[in-house]
Length: 280
Image (cartoon, rainbow, N blue to C red; front, side):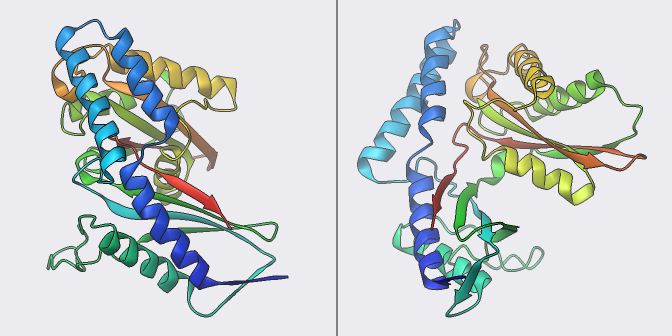
């Protein structure tokens, strides 16, 4: 049994909040650059160049890559042989978010009640997804989620008779409806299976998978590529100005489901689909 103070989790979350908001994953940066080189539409190529320059400026100046520094979503895998000490896990995570957003001078965008709309002024509470796993380690992924893209997400409870093509049409149709609102080029997280809430979780988790890593199952990897191709044929383009780069990647995550259902969720990430991780 390993003992771990929750104060170390607070420190890790704080640092990850700042890192994720200022430096995009390397494979996402490279994909944006690759898209700029292959984009044929001049205005779209220019916009992708502006996006690339913005990323470089944020990293060199130590400022957020986007003004919407998001709601902090934390995926935490807790080894079942770890004994946490010195306090509550949720409180430790929230304290890390509080410190990260205030010390990092990140925009605080969370309201304490969805209808009364009073800002908490420290971006807490975080959305915490906790998973127990074997071992003595704690893996933490912080994914700040901006709501321009979050608002373009959707879920549909298909019947089991729905085909592969029906699912692809739903995902592509959602990105068409979204248009320029989620600040394309987007990363599209797709959850298939589970139940109502598990399906939405899968779509959000999919956005934290490296864009350079296709689904392990060839069947779903091919679906990812077909969805990506069809989305990029929509002509929305970078920031909605047209072109062939509407999406950078489509990531699908799946889970077993009930014989009577087929849930599908689409969680849209903007061109700054942010996440950073560490293992304690």
